[in-house]
Each structure stands twice: as C-alpha cells, then as structure tokens.
Length: 180
Image (cartoon, rainbow, N blue to C red; front, top):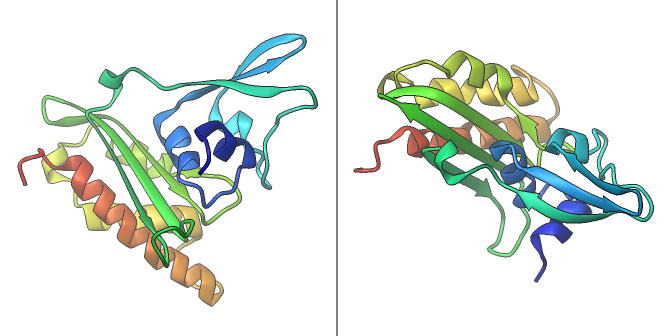
C-alpha cells in the first residue's frame, strides 16, 4: 500500500502516478519553512531520476485541472504480473470541441527516469477531426518520439513496441465517442 504523494516523491518511473501527473498537467504544491512553491511535473521530477525536493520540504498537495479540462483520460500499462510495476505505460488525455481535438496530452512512463510527454505528436494532432485520426499511426509516432525511430538495444526495441501498442490502445479509447 502506498499513497499518491509517496509514489510521486519516490519518483520511480514505473509507478502509475507519474504519467498521470505529467499527462494531466497537475501542479504539485511543496511546503517548506520559507513558504509554498507550486511546481509543474517537469519541474518536480529531475531528468536523471528523483525529485527537486530540497531538505525540509514536503509534498503538501496535488492540484489536478478541473474535470472539464479533458473530455477523456485513458491510462494503459503493461506489467508482468498483477502487482508488478509497469514495464511501460501511456496516458492520453483529450479535450474535444465539436468533434475536433482541442487539446491532447500523451505521457509515457516507465521507459525513462521521468515521464515523457509526446509533445510533438500532440501538437500534430491538435485541431484534427477526432474521428479521422489513425490511432495506430499516431502511436507509432509516439513510440518513435520517446524511444527513437529504430534500432537500439533489445530492451529499447521491446519498450518501443510496448509503447506503440499501449499508445494505440490509449488513443483509440480516448478518441472514441464512448459508444463502442
């Protein structure tokens, strides 16, 4: 058992909460003797692992955007056994307006020391008609943007395939109209 705050402070990239925080653009409030500072996930998580928490600071609050910010939020992960940490995970948060993607965020977890936003792919998809987006093609671009186009070690090749499959599922579910 653990807590959301504890999982974030442990900053294990395999934990589910890290891509959730990054993918939804939540803000983290850190309390110190000198006061409170509010951090974006990319400021809280340190690029080579860990957090930017200083001595005598604690994570005091997590502020998620209002529920109306996203139409759908979908999380997919792959793990060996039920209680194992993820080998790869993908969160896709979308907001549609009149059938078009008004905002999309795609966060990939467990394949780098910190969650990675597929910002370039999201920028390409923003403004698209949701029903016309090819989730498989977009998922391949997500995997390539996070782990490179091809090659790499067998582990990177495996992770790329996992991310592609998970991103495809997450995008399909996030872009569906909910009636399937």
